[in-house]
Length: 168
Ligand code: HEM
Image (cartoon, rainbow, N blue to C red; front, side, top):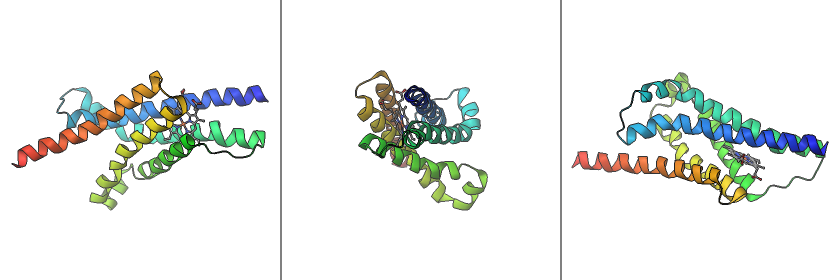
């Protein structure tokens, strides 16, 4: 049984990585546009960004279930909730709102609020980084997530600076 829990945990880790990869693909087209990068890849990525966003949530939910919920039930152990897991949970919780509103109906219904709500990605990316960085410390994965988080944040800064210059 211990072995099966260990195997589940390994698979659960892969689901966490898959979630992060989907998240990165979902935010990539917006990021490229904010940096003013014109590539043939951008329209293709835009076409599928919502699907990747939804996949991100589904992978993260499965990651949570296989790495935390099922092993806790199986082992009937007392529930511990280290800080890095709490941060992961907040990221998952916030992603739920993006998951539920990644459809045409929600875009129409929420109007300008939709744009504001989806700015949550800037918070989520840092939460994912903290989640992994606290759990693993300095590792190739935490470094990669840090680079994505910085690139995403700087793309927003770049967008507002360009807008400010155009308004002058
Ligand atoms: C948006 C939500 C989340 C994302 C994107 C995410 C992503 C990740 C990633 C990329 C890893 C590293 C996997 C590896 O090294 O192969 C990881 C590890 C882990 N995550 Fe999450 N996670 C999320 C939420 C959660 C939640 C809610 C929990 C549990 C409460 C959780 C528990 C864990 C655990 C136990 C590890 C292993 C840490 C270690 O010992 O290295 N995660 N997560």
